[in-house]
Image (cartoon, rainbow, N blue to C red; front, side, top):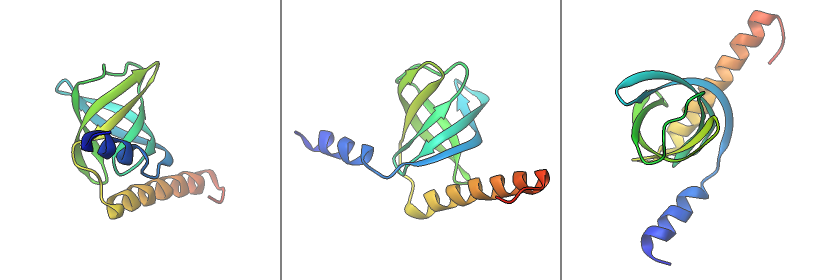
Length: 114
């Protein structure tokens, strides 16, 4: 196994965190609404009714910044991306905190406890 293969395998083995968070993505120059389903430092699982094909480069708003990423696979309404530059642990933590805040705000509007 070469260095690139080892690096790719290590990236795929980073902890993944489940989410259901609305996000925006630039696909072929168009701003598109998507949903993050899971997030790791190296990439994300995303839902969209018409996923882009594997291989194209996109920009995803994540952890407060637009991130360059490549679509690595696409099936049905889900697709996986690999970030050009991995997120730091702090950036992953911030994204998860944002998700928790959104859930708590929604629960509060419904009169429930998150």
